[in-house]
Amino acid sequence: MTGDGGRLPIVLFGARVCPDGTPSRTLRLRVEAAAAFARTCEHPLLIPTGAARDGLPSEAAVMATMLRDLGIAGENILPEETARDTLESVRACSRLLHAMGHDGPVAVATSAYHLPRCMALMALAGWRVMRVPPPPHPAARSVPRRWFWRLREGAALPWDVLLMLAQGRRGASSCD
Image 1 (cartoon, helix red, strand yellow):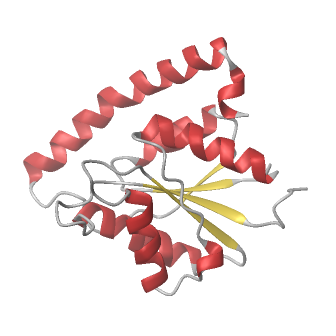
Image 2 (tube, rainbow, N blue to C red; image 1 turned 90 degrees about the vertical axis):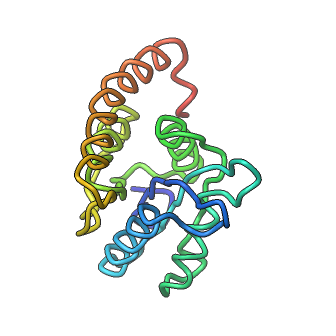
């Protein structure tokens, strides 16, 4: 039994906000994919995550606005605006979900290249994870940029897993 009314949390991982405060292409594609998935769920709770940087609005706030513009009701959106990277997002959203009394599955929404790391970290945080179908278009338009992001994720995945395991051993309360 979950303490959240049986809602399905959909953790929506952030991406860069453009210098004018508008969503980047990657952010826009992630939000559109998450909104499409949420429309297929009976009781979704979208949790956009990502902090503000350089005086710009937070990634979470930009995503929340986009979700509302795409027809997602405000009561189905719970922004998490403190996390500055993927690992912090996992930890912050885990704390939020635990505080809500949630103990069911968690859906993970992001770009295809980022999905393996996000799902692995959420699973390491103790969640049963579901994959939200990623955007149908690649985040980067050029082949070299696509390979850059894939290679970056290839390095970031084992690093974040090691950090998660090391930090978890020092204090499991970081996700409680």
